[in-house]
Image (tube, rainbow, N blue to C red):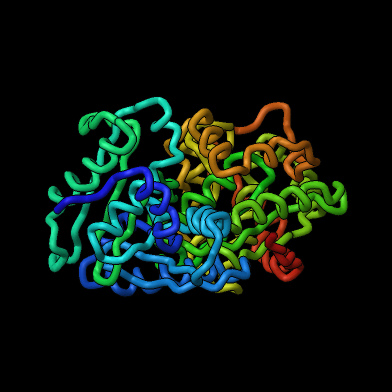
Length: 412
C-alpha cells in the first residue's frame, strides 16, 4: 500500500490525529486466572473514583489486558495529560499512556504517527526510532510487522530519521483494538501491585517519621485499604505532630482515596509508663500499649491487620527480641513491609512517593516523652507483662481507643 508523505500531508495530519485518550496497562492483575474479572472490576472502580473529583467526563472501558479512558470529543491535550497523571497513582496499573484514538484505517494510523512525531526533539536531533505494533484485532488488514514497516517507512522518509530497532531514542507504539487504533509514544510508570480494596482493610500506626508512610504505601500496593492511627503526646505536647500526620495522610490519599486519620491523646498514658520505674523497658512497654490500643481501634473499624514501619535492627525497639515482645501484645497480625529494607532504601522510596519532605519537618513527637538514656534491646515478655498488670493495660487500651478523634482528609 502506498502512503503519501508530502509536506501537505504532514501539515494536514495534525487535524486528523484523532481524539486524545488514556491507555492503562495492567500488571499482575492479568495473572489472576478465574478471579481476574473481579480484580479488573475493582480496578475500574478505583480509576473512576480517582477521576471523580476532576470535573472531567470520562468513559472507562475494559479491553483485553488494557483499560481505556475515553474523553469527550474536543477534550484538550492538557486535560488528557492531567487525567493521565491522576490515574498514574492508582495501584494495579504499571503504565499509563496518553494516547491518540484513531480510526481503524492504515492511512489514519500513518497520519497520526506523523503528527505525533512532528514536534519531538528527536526529529531535530535526527535520533534513531522504532515502531512497535500490536494487533489485538486480527481482522485488521495489516499484520503487526507490516504495520511497523508502513508507519516506519513514512516517518523515516518524511523526517529523515534513521531506524534503530535495538536501542531507539524514540519509539512509536501502535495498538490495534476491536473498535479503534491507539497511537502513542511515552508513558508514565504506575505503582503496579493490586487494586486497593482487594486484600481487605488494615490500620497503619502512623508516626511523623519517614518509615510509616512508606509502609502504608507498600501495603496499599498489595491491595489493602488502610486507615491511619496517630498517637499524640497531648496534653504534654503541642498539636504539631497531628498536623504533620494529617499532611502525610493527605499526601498518601491519592493512592487510595477516602482515607481516614484517627488520633489518640497518648500523653497521660506515657506518663503512667514512665512512673512505673522501668526506665529501660519504657519504650517497649509503650509500643505494646500502642499495639493493644491499635488492635482495639482496628476491631471497631473492622480492620483485619495492623501495619508498622519497623525495619529489623534499625533502632533499639526493632531488634528481633523486641519485635517478638511486641508481637506478643496482640492477637491481630502485624504487617511489617519494611522489615528487610535499610534506611537508604526507605528514604529513596519516601522521596519518590512525595512524603520525605513532610516527614523531615520538625515536630514534637510523642516518643520524645519517653527517651531513656539506655533502652533495652532484649526485652523479656514476662517483665513487660508485670508492668502491664500494674497499669491495667488492657482496660487502658480500651479507654484510649474510646478517646480517638477522626480527622477528615480534604483532597485537592
